[in-house]
Image: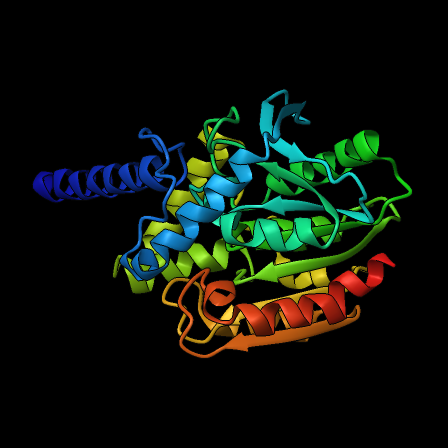
Length: 308
């Protein structure tokens, strides 16, 4: 019987070890510097556009800025003021990304429509401090702080728009349920998930082909112990049920990371004014690149019209 006990102990240790390795890979800050180009082959055909867009933004001499988060982290980003601004956009990038990497191709469209640009690096990403990515759980408060920063910098009379992609979309949706300043007039949630717990379940099952139990409970325990957050305390579905802010939901129907059903579920749950833009053949985070003209037309109609 003793060997059975040792075998069970060995299995438990192995499970914890595997989960801890996953925790370090997926929750902790990436050790290598973020590639300025998206790391996925699906973006290769757009590489020249992305590079050109990044060069344009950097040539405008954006100003480096920073704020202090609610838990004492220095969060960094860049701003590009417009001399005749009629609004401000605050961008929230995706998982293990940066503001410039994830939004480069869209920046000029917003700037040309006379918006000030606020382009942060989220906690534990890019130039910002932080050790742990929390999938929107803590980042929602950072988003609110960047809005307050925008109001201090550009004035609270200018309307503010939020734009998030992937994890940034979840961040934006969760932030929309907070007590935001009244000048936040619209939000864009592009390929966002329904909750941190749901996307981790999806990746465990469909990406890693691991059983949900016992890996999810162990992973959540590690998040609580090491990173100070729980995967099940933030829910985008509940957030969009309680917001006043109009939201444009966008999602690629060929999304291979966040299922399109998550995007439509968030749209369906939203009780504020809303639109849903589904893009055939667009993979994760590619809706704007694949259907730029249609996307911008919808932005003009549903989002930018609120700036006048």
